[in-house]
Amino acid sequence: MFKLNKLTSAIQLREEGQLNESNELLGKLVKDNPENAELNFHYAWSFDVLGKEAEAAPYYEKALHIGMDDSDTLSATIGLGSTYRTLGEYKKSKQVFERGIARFPENNALKTFYSMTLYNLGETNRAMEILLTCIVETSNDPDVGPYKRAIGFYADKLNDIW
Image (tube, rainbow, N blue to C red; front, side):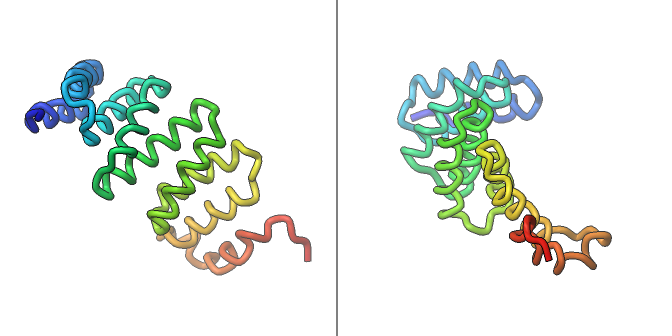
């Protein structure tokens, strides 16, 4: 079993901007503990922040396959879906996000990343509907407030003409 303080050190290194050092430490931990979901998740994340999305994907996949708590599962789902999107694997990205939304239907970050994938797939109407609905549900902007009802109404009617 790995030492928790080594994982904590790797996370701290990442937070301090020592990204390569964090990645190297996590790589050693994963090599010694390949079936540890949390380590696989953080190793994937460490590749993501280095701009090495193709290397991140298999570790996100493994972490999600093994299983984690809800918070890490949500983060790994966003990470994997976003990684697939940036790699141009839009259909895989859509599948990941749809599974995530089924599990975490109220999470607006997940929905926002999903809308980006829908945009890439040419599903712009659905992407806009999701984003506009998120704005209506979450915005505290005083300029948006008076128009929330109208924005919500038009969210799924962008092509309608009256």
